[in-house]
Length: 100
Image (cartoon, rainbow, N blue to C red; front, side):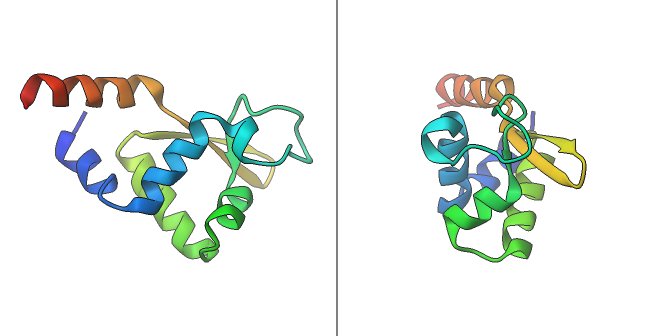
């Protein structure tokens, strides 16, 4: 886990909001049309719609979050779904408590 890289990713309010929304996807996003669960996360289109940002911006944000291991992508056909990496998030929070 790279604490500095994760901290950089979390320095953006929209990326923090995305992680907050992904914590409870059923409460923050409409049901998926292609699959009937959120086990693999939320599709990029729903995240884009909720933020109101362009597809390229959201893809860049999600890519940086994936590179920091904060989210886990899963492909279903032509769609990619993202969910939180709870283990990394928990380890990051614990490391901040210990280091500060």
